[in-house]
Length: 361
Image (cartoon, helix red, strand yellow):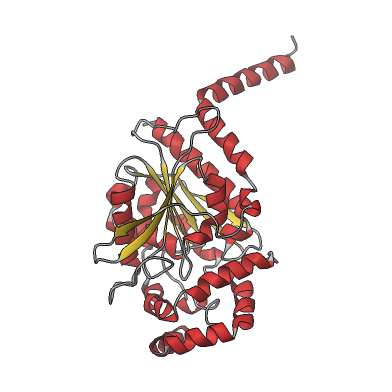
């Protein structure tokens, strides 16, 4: 036998051992591959589960939906880990959006893994925030409440987009003990832990080329007349659509994507936009991200993101030991839709890394 054939045989043998040792993971990933593209053939906004309500610590009702794991036709069982019950994915959405923004990820994972989606306070179907509680820190408290009630046991992977990523970082600051214990993986998409020019994140909703300080004053004044602003946004829907296309996306995307995101933005009352707005300027939590080094952490951002630019993700990557960084060329802030196939593939890798870390405990 030639040396080349021996080497090939050895490599093949090693591959068989590797596959055999992770047979459950291979089956899971095979089902994930088979579901790719499901979001493109499923009407946007059509994926829902029976609603649940979690009451936040200040009494605000939070709308929650859970997609349970469904055994496949071959009788596959829900994967368990040395930590106990199977892993659960929890998705946290961004500013002025709602849980429907995860359409493509939801279509890809539906039935394959237990997944939790919820509307942040004052967003979507959740109740309005109490006075003074429309803050990033409060969102961290809300996420803890959801974990306590909806995922009371077992390992969790948290995925946050934009303000949702900030929510996860707030949780890390408030409860660092969860990371490496209950929380076994984190995905941070188009987000930051601080240093954000808040005027930028306002652009899809109210395009303003003002300095940051002046923007704060303008938003405060407009917030008082929020009903008038909401009316103007509806009347100027063509202008709003163009702004959404320009600031939420990088490349040309299907019109349906733009309309879908624009509806989420327009359905968020400007009063809510104004209430949360001050939190972004004061956000300063890079000191808290170190605890994410305890778990597999995937950072994802589009290089064409005009709202939380790629520099924020690169800084997060440099601040979190062992993290990965996926830069989606030319994609914008809504990379979870614009490059949904790449985002979901990266989340597949995150799930695999989290599962491997659990098995090595």
